[in-house]
Amino acid sequence: MFRSRSRAKKAWKIFLILLLTGLVLFPLSAKEPLNAIAVPLTEIIKVPLTIVSLIEQTLEAGGKALQSLIDLHGKNQVLTDELARLKIEHNRLEELAAAAERYRTLFDFQQHCPYPTVVAQVIGRDPTNWHRSLVIAKGERDGVIAGMGVITPLGVVGRVLKVNRTFSVVQLILDRNNAITALVQRTRDEGIVQGVENGRAMMKYLPPLASVESGDVVVTSGLDDRFPKGMVIGIVNRVEKKTATPFKSATLTLHADFSTLEEVVVLLATTPLDGRDSECSMPHKDDGEGGA
Amino acid sequence: MKFLVYGGVVLLIIPFQVVVVHRFAIEGIVPDAVLVTVCLVGLWRGEFEAVVLGLVLGFLQDLLSGATVYLNLMTKPLIGLAIGIVGRTPLSLIRWMIPILITGISFVSGLIILFLLQASSSEMDVVQALLSIVLPQALYDGVLGAIVLLATFRLFPTLHRRVWNP
Image 1 (cartoon, rainbow over the protein chains, first blue to last red):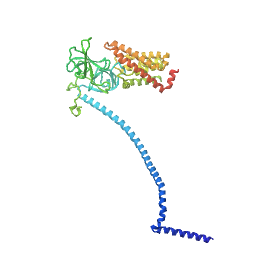
Image 2 (cartoon, each protein chain N blue to C red):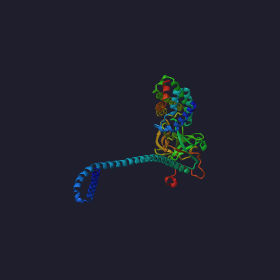
Image 3 (cartoon, helix red, strand yellow):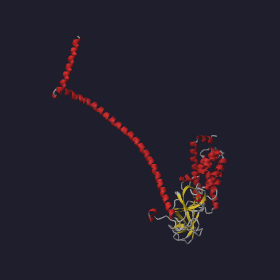
Image 4 (cartoon, rainbow over the protein chains, first blue to last red):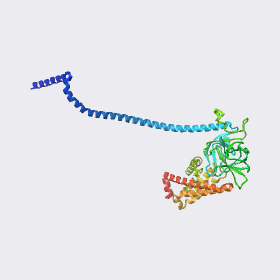
């Protein structure tokens, strides 16, 4: 019985070998019947293959997109931080550039001004609504004393009212208690420039026959010892004559914007330094490289 | 401890009034943070502390202003005294009355300063000063007082309970 079973196995083996050899060695035409089965089978198998392939491709693309999104998020974070840093840096540099420009203007002004001066930073403004003043970061230590004139390249600012060791209070030309002797540049009519209630300045006590007009430039007269003669105060805005007084008065438009002043120049003396012209004004733009 | 707190208040309020408050100016009018501080201290801590604080703050305010007379040194302790007395009345228990009280006190204080200045300078236009300085500042002080009150009660709710539920 065992012998017959081993013979059958041997017969099957020989049959399989012959079949495989036959399939390989058979001519192509002989494979036609197999192909007839294979074609529909491949068509059927093609559907899940395509689906799986599509899923695989989609997953791969999704993975890549996710990865790139993660990368982008990281890069975006880095760039956002960088942008914020650069914005701060840009603001800082803009502020520095503006300060440098202001200091350059003040330096040029100082160079062209024949009087000894000191540049002071504005650190505060009047804590009440009743007076118009500035607090500057220069005091007795820097040679500032009460009564000194304070100017900017644009014109007269006021006078030093109170002095401490390291800071001073400057009474603005707009203050009601401040008065500066002035004259109209064109007509040479003299008067007194004084602040009025609503934060404006007026030139009072102009002669009744003065031919002052709107647009005339008002400068310091040099009669008091705070300001040298010829420093610009402002421009005549409107001339008026009240019936109660024999004098004319004129409202002025001042050159300097006192609400945004950041630096001022304190006149330490009103006598020119040796060998220098007594004119204290801003150099013209066409003076050359350093003249702006 | 109390001295330290008041010292801190002085060191905070004066630079705030001189340097920062001008950024909030409306038509050139700035609120008086010193007045509001003295008022609130008067309401919460009584007239004695308000008067002393008013003396110190008023003196410093005059030192840093273009004033030639010590107007704030005179008016700020008076404000502290007045508001301290009002603070003992049931009026101060009504929360929304506080900004109105501050407005009133600021207005009266402005009037005192106006007449003192008018006495020293005959050229002063009283009506214009009243309309362009005294009145707007009183209103602004009331608004600032209301803001400070709200902020204080948000930050320190226990203070709120202590003040209005003693």
